[in-house]
Length: 295
Image (cartoon, rainbow, N blue to C red; front, side):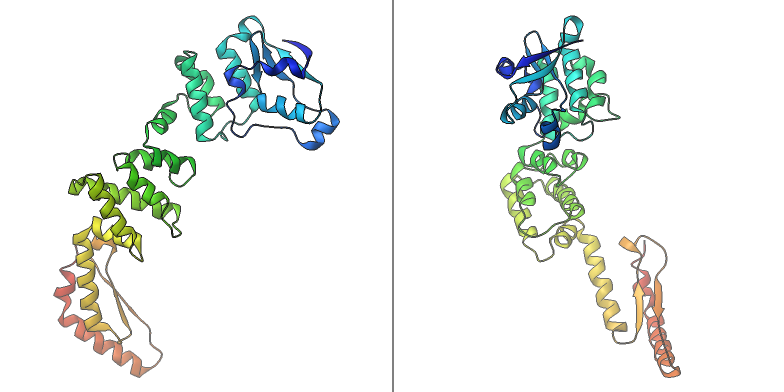
């Protein structure tokens, strides 16, 4: 590869790959002052990498810019793109929109069959653009959630049949929601909508109703698993009736999936121990009622 120095004004002609970065790699102020910057890439038909760096150098008052000339085979689209990605050197740190731009550029150039040479420079460990294709096929609100880090691509893809406005409703829910809570709510809402065969209007009404609850995750869970919620309510009511105020705790396995209950208590005197034994005796009389909850 040849090296040269070009005047800034000569680098206005730019190829698409010179402009695809949302958050480009740029030198520090100190590097600019010392004149330590990477050379730009230039092909016969225009700037390859990076328009943002070129603009930054011009703003800093540079009159001439070092370039590396790509010629012959090096100037072919595949080699230009891989060279630009190597110069950008942000594998694993590209935004979703940057990845989408890279994908669209490769499709425009007819390079999708060469993806295994390109994609590892974008996302280490991957060999094709299937993840980007999934991202681009998502409804707008789900794509935005993935882009903003509110939900992962796998979950968004799993619930993509939810009406787009429902995704927007969950995304902009006014109260604080953790990543895990949002993911669980989306998955269960999708299951509710499928099970009940709700159209967009009904799905929006149902989602809005559940999210308006003081505890939206719990409300959505109860709507998704009504039988389990009913069993939990019945178990809690029976436990409260028999054991409240006795100092004896009775626990069922999660989801009542198991074959045993757990009893626990504390005591610090003979009197307290006698009270606990009396409560256990009363519990024994109603054991069948509680054992009936177990799977």
